[in-house]
Length: 141
Length: 126
Image 1 (tube, chains in turn brown, red):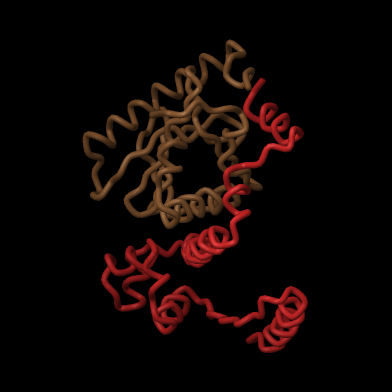
Image 2 (tube, helix red, strand yellow):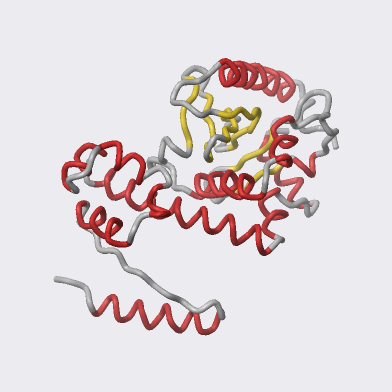
């Protein structure tokens, strides 16, 4: 069951170049944080290292597709990867990335679950932009 | 309020990121750092390849390896690679590998790194 979250839970990593936040749904949940908290310590460390590495990587430097991969072209949806773990994210502007959904991927191609996660991420992006424009996304505790 | 403004407010209120909270556990910090070391080594290869316009296929040709093997090396494989393999790949992109054993004590660590840096600069090839 999803936990209600507060703004104190939002920041994943504040890098010198890029910042990462969990997606915060209208009903106060952060679905990918729920999954992250259920990962074992090895999985948590591996995925956090990917966020920290890319968060501090200079703009213009190529990052390995095995760590950060483009899962959808327009709108651009990327995934942070560590082993079978995938966290999808979209760009919110000013080098802030919103981490939305979790899925597992064993093969090169996206399976049904992965495709559904990317679709949800696209919906999350629309929802984020709508609530941001209405001044309702960050204006809560 | 946009994402940057909201983050500044959270920081002013003393709210920590998940990374900071995880890193308050020494064991977790060590685990994250171990992964970061691997990522940084991979990144150094990617940077060198990008700067010299060397593709994975070209690196495979230069090291007489299969392209799939290079892909594996640059996707976590280097963490379990032998030092000789890392040297071979570095040589193929015109780099040397410098291995350092540094003490954990901060003072000794600084002193050792300064000494090694001095030696390395002195040992530079012209």
